[in-house]
Length: 323
Image 1 (tube, rainbow, N blue to C red):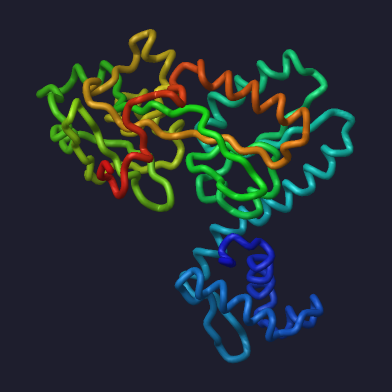
Image 2 (cartoon, helix red, strand yellow; image 1 turned 135 degrees about the vertical axis):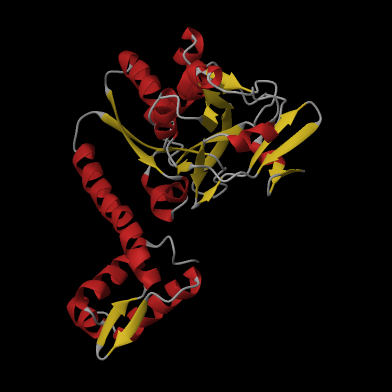
């Protein structure tokens, strides 16, 4: 098993950073130094980088170790905070449902859906946390939340996954930006001449492909701004600074209706992103009732497509090419 998603190993990593030596950590927690060293060596092997270098008797972070320290600290601390929140919440008389959800869905669709559900189920309380796609795939997240929404299925014995909807995307810009252009945008090739604000994840831009009929066009531009939050992209689009790429349609429903945003090259379509739902405990009545309600809600939610959609899905591509 990879140690990359093992929070206990990362906690050892933080203790070594704090104490400066494995021997001091060993003495503090009562675990043999050789055992700690093996776990850190395994973590470095799984990551493919060295996290520490020795300076005299002290262990200090390498440049890669510093990156790991800054990026993983929030995840580990958030996990500790989550466990504390769950302990407090489970002492509450209400039936608590914990949810993990990708950034984006957690900002627009899920808060509205949950509030509608709670109107008719006042004895239920919900705790939802926004996680990145990487965080959603950690073993800690998989074992901690009653309900998870993800873009890939979790095919493991402790959870069942079901495709419940797809996210439609578009190229977005304001009429003010488009009306100010010297030359109109007639094809995807013209996009390279414009400021592009792009969605990315896992430290890289998403593989983007547009389709028009049987024609495919890979978007290999380098965006002027890359964000892992579609709400951030919307902020610059609405200020007429350029074109938003891979914009979820559900983020712009009101603006499309009132004409303050236009779909650029509407005849060219992005593939639809799958949304899967999984639950940890199949025997909890409150969780099952909520999951069944949410599945039906998503099937009719504006900006999403139902699982029966027969168009192009992101899962139909490998490395940006249709399969």
